[in-house]
Length: 113
Image (cartoon, rainbow, N blue to C red):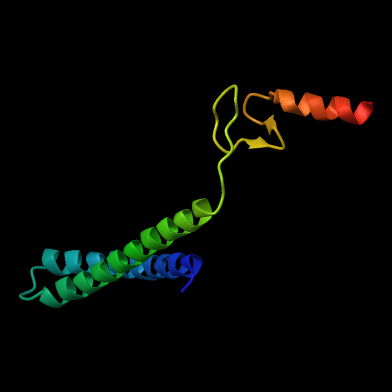
């Protein structure tokens, strides 16, 4: 699976199991407050949905981490020579400190001659 699909699957698991977990938790609390004899089935169902939530969380984190690794592995990072910001420099113009690298002026002077 692609990293984006792993992330999407994890988020889907998380979003599907979250309301089930809360509803089962509410039913378990109601059962315990009504002082019925056995509320173990609600504990088991809530445990199963908790495992589904955990599985979705792990898939989401793993997919996001994989996406980050793939995104940064093939690209070389550009640094601004004045402010040192990473990735803010495009075509020798820094969008963080609004500075232009000196080499850009040389290219402009060559074009005007």
